[in-house]
Image 1 (tube, rainbow, N blue to C red):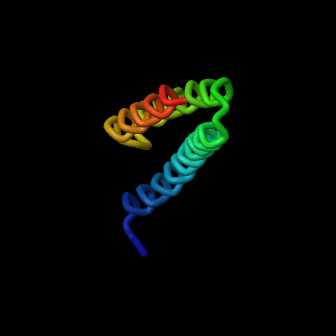
Image 2 (image 1 turned 180 degrees about the horizontal axis):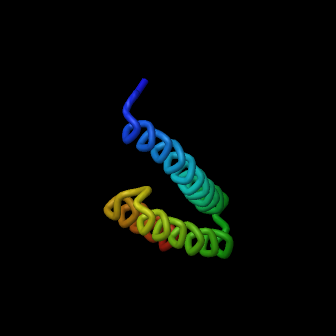
Image 3 (image 1 turned 45 degrees about the vertical axis):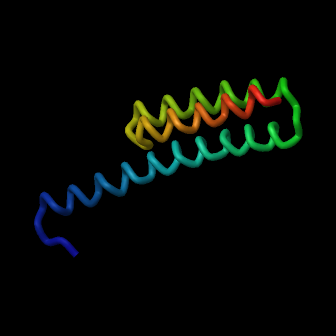
Length: 86
């Protein structure tokens, strides 16, 4: 355990940030799964709505630094291809 004041503060900050990042990442995964579910069912309208919601969540996660921009771009590209196939 740290015994320097600056490191104790850094640990507290890391715990707080990890909590915020977990919330964003969990919400992102929920929306990605919703798209996968709609795609598997073959429902074009709900898949389209889920695609837009998931894309928005990906962009927000990138802006908050939770996920890398290339990961978000790859996910959006993969979802767009799947949506076009429906």
